[in-house]
Length: 88
Image (cartoon, rainbow, N blue to C red):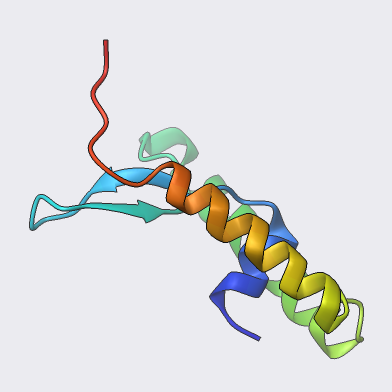
């Protein structure tokens, strides 16, 4: 099980971000950086990770065929959001 399986299972959606090299890439928002919500956001994310690991151990993740179909859909989503984006 890897990152792609976790993203499919968790329904977290990658968003375009600019990294320190000023390159656009996809990332998942783990928690808001506002001080009053940071610890709660990290805790919520860790619960998702724990839930995913538990589902994997218990065999409750999609079959290989369904996972492949989900992966194709996920890759199409990521490609749609690649490239330079500008706000209005």
